[in-house]
Image 1 (cartoon, rainbow, N blue to C red):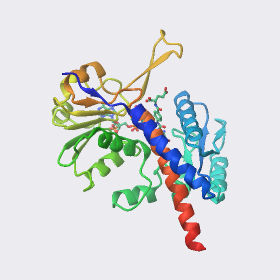
Image 2 (cartoon, rainbow, N blue to C red; image 1 turned 60 degrees about the horizontal axis):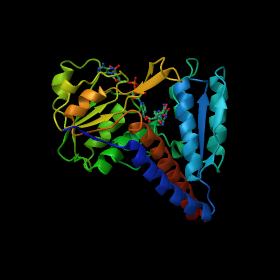
Image 3 (tube, rainbow, N blue to C red; image 1 turned 180 degrees about the horizontal axis):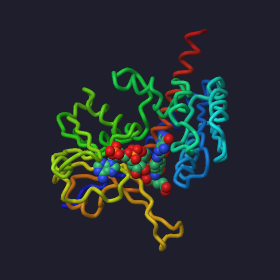
Image 4 (cartoon, rainbow, N blue to C red; image 1 turned 90 degrees about the vertical axis):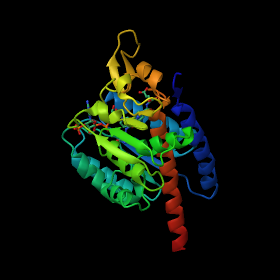
Length: 297
Ligand code: NAP
Ligand code: L37
């Protein structure tokens, strides 16, 4: 039997709609949730993702303070902008879209964002809190994956999860979150140094592909009935498309469909969830600021 296709697009729309209701309440209480998305340069994929984030902000009724800087922007100019936004009490979230141009040190930039406004959850303070199980902004993509699993009714307790990819923005935080008691999965992280990858992925009840390597997960690497989450978003040149490319995941979708129990497609899988969770984090940040202001009264 073919796998169930997990509709990330629909689940993300539901989350945005709930966030819109909460945003309205907050606005009635006098606080307008506001996010500043900073994009440096014109990387086509980044432009597309940032546009998606801005569309979502408009849809949920939040204020959009996004800033598009030119490729030649210096590191100091970017740091100065972040300092200004840190000080601006009407801004609740700051997100710098990665990757940054080569002449800018991404780590330095992330460190400059106030942890209270770091809705991406990339600042070491948020990462550290995440690891020790304290309250923190959860990175949007891992958070989105967890919500997809929950919404699909995939049991994580006692499950064997295998994650292919160990990046700071996806694989690593997702592995930590899935090992939390509330999810209780047993997690294996794979990377380019992993030997006999297929033997490991075949043991996964939950297989998460976050490698950025188109179609690297083939049908024979999947345990029958497994939940397969494809985080990869890869642009493949395609002259039959108006855009000149098509999007594909890290999983050979047609092959996987025959083996998996459920699977996310690309597009309309994890991607829209990443953006929806960004709206959730921005709302949470605005609520935190409101609560803090009330305590100071
Ligand atoms: P990244 O920083 O490039 O990291 C990729 C990871 O995968 C690395 O740990 C790498 O191993 C590992 N890897 C690559 N090829 C492999 C292979 N053949 N076998 C085993 N491991 C392999 O990537 P990222 O930022 O996490 O992104 C991963 C993918 O997710 C990309 O396609 C990206 O576009 C996509 N993404 C999607 C969303 C979304 O919202 N859907 C969000 C973020 C990223 P090493 O560490 O050994 O190099
Ligand atoms: N939070 N996310 C955050 N910060 C960053 O610095 N790079 C980065 C990041 N990654 C990111 O934004 N990824 C991402 C990937 C895919 C989508 C959105 C965000 C997405 O919407 N994908 C759509 C297709 C979009 C398209 O047509 O290009 C999808 O359906 O998968």
